[in-house]
Image (cartoon, rainbow, N blue to C red; front, side, top):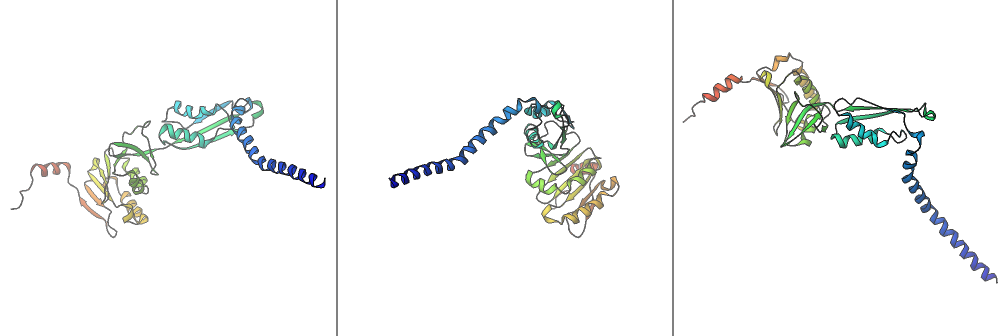
Length: 271
């Protein structure tokens, strides 16, 4: 008889062991079901509905585009967050939003008077980036975004064979050069293998910058700031070349009349 009771005890212990091993999986299953249905349950509770949602800072991007990104939360202040709104706006605007901040005033939560303020900061374009047959916008930090909602009139045009290379090249000098170029209407930038050529058509001036990997960044900025601190007309009819480490070359640039005259009266080739 003692042997029989011993065997039954082992069977009972085996059942408890199986149950203990299954409990974590059962808990995960219940947690997963709760996580799946919780948004639907919470979304139907008026306590989590904001009375007012205010949006600030959308100047260029149409309001309807911003509203569609915010409306996915259906005024649910519990789930409304900056990263989710920014991600939705990045998809619809082509990365044209720099940042999103969400501020929630929960003092009236039990009176259903929660107010949510959303602050949207758009990227500020400083140049049009042209790569083969495609064009994009670039801000002062080198970020690339769609020009769908922006006015490109008066912006500097950068022609480049490589977007990635251009981001690396212009990231540290784009701000000072764009501030200087903003006073001129006609200006283009050409990225080449030998340097960065800034053509200022208004004053028939040209500024040549070295590639990033061929110059000390701090030294270049110091010399560039010296050039940009001169009077506005300093570059008039000049070519200022900053590609050399120990000196700056400055030479006269032919005026438009001189260029036309040279093209009309070419020199005879030597025999």
